[in-house]
Length: 205
Image (cartoon, rainbow, N blue to C red; front, side, top):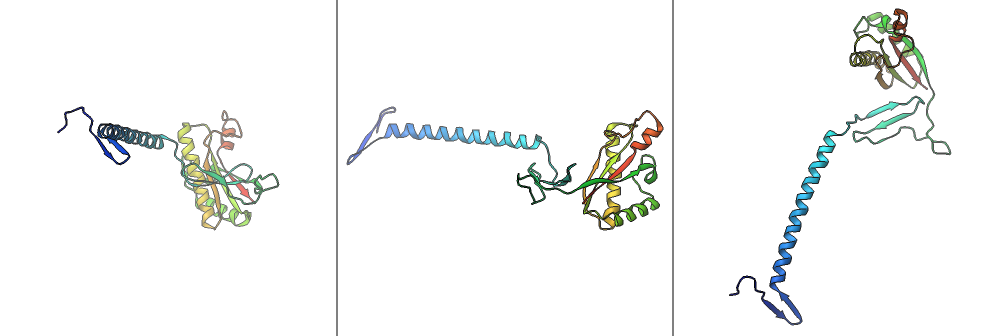
């Protein structure tokens, strides 16, 4: 029997083992392991919280003003769709142009994203004849109502036009609503507001 605090030394050949030192090392390593585990759990929780609070990305494809198609993943990773590049490694993108500007008053009733049957027929005929590889649909409003409301209304109207395009087999590269943020005329007159209420169709060739 050994009193507390004493060390007992065993010798096997040339190896000397100090049991008191062994106990100390085991205790220290256990404490260190517990500390590392606690730190790992804390770090994991912090990372998870950061992931939840961070920006959310919606996977999909979008087209920039130069006609370049981009893919984006839900983790924010992004790249070009086209495999073609020039000698400098810059992607060779398609030609784009605004091939139609539809006055919203001719397609929609006030505060509505429903397209009349006559408006749908006009749009179907347009998409059948336009001959583009894909289309980007951008909705716009005047400055009446709130910015939030106008953003939602312009997106709903753009989506309504895109649905007509899809119904005749047209490929839609992107659908966006800009609300009142990109006016082409003043919003201080009725004529100017009428010009701002529009859906632009961009042809990608």
